[in-house]
Each structure stands twice: as C-alpha cells, then as structure tokens.
Image (tube, rainbow, N blue to C red; front, side, top):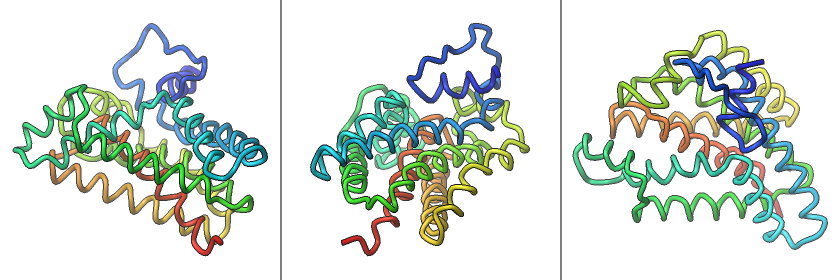
Length: 242
C-alpha cells in the first residue's frame, strides 16, 4: 500500500504521511491510484455540496463546496495554474517562461487565471442540479487521470516533479487507472460521456499549449491541467439547466 499512501500524501491534505525513504520515480509508480484519490476528493466535496445546498442559497453553497475542495488538495493544483498562467502567456523567450513558472511569486496573469477559474467553478457548483451533482466525482477523478498521459509528453525540464513522475510511470497504470472515470461517465449517461470528452479535450489543449510555449510539461502544467479539466467537466452538466 506504499503507492496508495504516496498518492494520497502527494495530492491531498488528508492524514497520509509520505514515506521517509522516498525513491526516484515514486510519484509515477503511485499514478495508478490518482483517479481513486480524485474519487475520494470528489465524494467529500459532493457530501459538502449536499449539505450546503440544504442549508444555504446556491451561490453560497457552491462557494462553500469549492472551499472544501481546495482545502482537501491544499491548493496544490491552483498553485500550478497560477504559475503556468504567468509563464505560458508571457511574451518572452521560452527560457524566460520557464524561469517565470518556477518563480514562487504570482503575477498579473496568475491572479487573473486564479480568479477566473475559481469564480467559474464556484458558479458551476452553485448551478448544479441534484441529478447532475455526481458530476463532481467525475470531474475530480478524470482530472487526475489526465495527469497520466501528460507524463508521456516531452519534459520542459530534465529534473523536477514531472521528471520524477515520468521516470516511474508504467503504461499499465494508464489503462488500469482509467476504470474509475470510465465507470463514472457511463453511470452518468450521455451527459457524463460528453463531459468526459470535453474534459479530455481541455487537457489536450492545455498540454498542447505547454508544449508550444515551453517545449513540454512540468509539475505546474500537471496542476493547471487538473484545474482546467475539473472545470471543463462540470460545465456540460449545466447545459439546459433552468
């Protein structure tokens, strides 16, 4: 269960301690469990949504749900989103973009990206109908599965989180870990299939942008991908909502 503990320790604030004897590639070897981590995050967020919608007006309930969602992840992926917005959209040479992404300070593009994604996600959670609320589980699970194919893209840096992930990633994990989001999207019916397709397309666009702008992926690109996919998956569940 070492890999499972690593997956939860890396991607959540839940009480799972990372092993002290960390080995190169451990983050990649734990990748098969990432969609399960997403499912747990999604389930806890969904329970929050159910309780909050019973007690509060929709937008307040959506905001409370988002706060819990962010707390469960420690804002890990939001940090990557902000760094990537600053670096990928800067009109500077590729080397300078990588320096900006690595810089812990948040610039204007990062702030704008954070505000837009958080507002859009809160609004989506507020507008979800009870019948579509299980889309929260699909969003959280599929977004973390999308990290796996990203691990096979060229690396923007020869070291760092993405390099460690890629060195331990196994092809069998890509297939096995897809089972959870696949089951969820079929249980959710046509809307679930549409949401999953849009989510995967959003991940591909995000990775394609990173490849064009910085030559490959980094750990921050993984974080940005998770945030973009989660939001993209939620939106189709709102089509036709009154």
